[in-house]
Image (cartoon, rainbow, N blue to C red):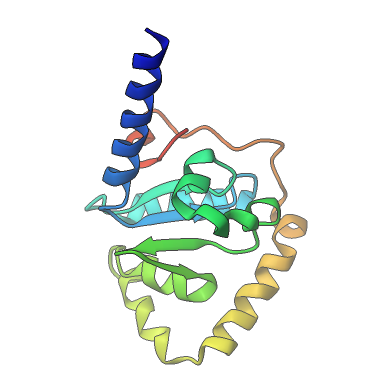
Length: 153
């Protein structure tokens, strides 16, 4: 009986992962107030509900990202998985904004700004985000109305 439950759980986990990779996923620092506010911003402006979300601290992030999850202990970057390609830092933000409503969907036009310049600004904010916006003791639980947009453990 235990073996059947174990196999059933493994099958269910693989189905969750397979389904989760069909739509883009935003991986974020779940204890960062700025990151949580950004997720709410994205949720409110992604009217087609294309984006899914997962905390970098979650086991689902570890399963999907594999060895790249070393960022989990010091998550200084938002990660964006789209069509099997993992983007980070300012490029991730630019890619995410393409899914948002007007005028935010125009931000991908900033791709012409050289990546080192965009990432310099991104890194400066990332280094100071806890000092400026604070930090949570644990990852915040999603609002029940938005729960389906989050990949959970």
